[in-house]
Image 1 (tube, rainbow, N blue to C red):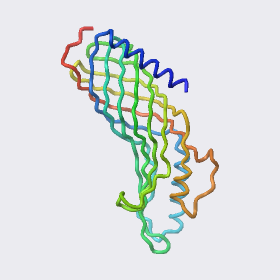
Image 2 (tube, one colour):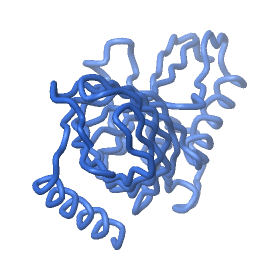
Image 3 (cartoon, one colour):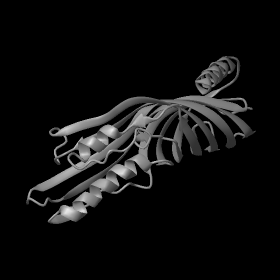
Image 4 (tube, rainbow, N blue to C red):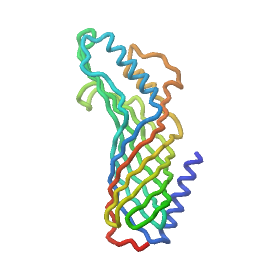
Amino acid sequence: MKLTGIALLLFIICIYNSALSQDRKYLYPGMEFESFLKPEPLNLIIDDYNEFHSKNDLNTSHSFIIPDYTQGFSVGTKIHVRFSEFGGNVHFNSFSTASQGTASDGTEYYNKIIVSHNGFLIFYRILIINTNYFRTGSGVGFKVEQLKTKLNFTKDPSVNTMIPANKALMSGQISYNISVGGPKFNMDIGVFYQIPFWKISVNGLNTSLNKDFAKDYSTEQMNFNAVSWGINFCIGLGSKDNYDF
């Protein structure tokens, strides 16, 4: 938990700095694209499901796939002080995949998996270049999220739904951002890499989705390590004051 303490300390320091420095505040809506680096437990579960249905279905009209990336949106705020900036956001990321066909007994089926992680991020960055209309630098962040897997067994999500995994997750993040624009309007592009502080078991997803043919995997094989990297794009709507750094 050392990263947690470091992130919180930096957050307190930058709040103190902002109280003593001239600053510019922004509201930031944005989009995020993210890729899990170690999706092996999800791959095992989905591959077993697809293999079973490819061998036994009378007809398979659509099979599960693992997307190369997840996507989501965020809304946050940023305060730009001299040679640094800090802020935070709430974000909502997810991916879904569906499977449909006719089972060996002639019964039509529809299954959908949704994996989501929603939460908030606080961050602090040092700007190695800081001008009125161009800024860039690296930073650290701290994320608190709820990671959830959800199963829908019909096209109506209000019925026949299960949530096999639903657990809080904390992560440390490092990032590098480029910001272009003045005091009224910014466009930010950033890359990030984040490491969760613990893994999440998805064995419940295996036993629920692959009921009656689920393989008996070890605890370690079913522990999902949600380490990831990604890209975000944000539009900043700022104060009407001019910079005079």
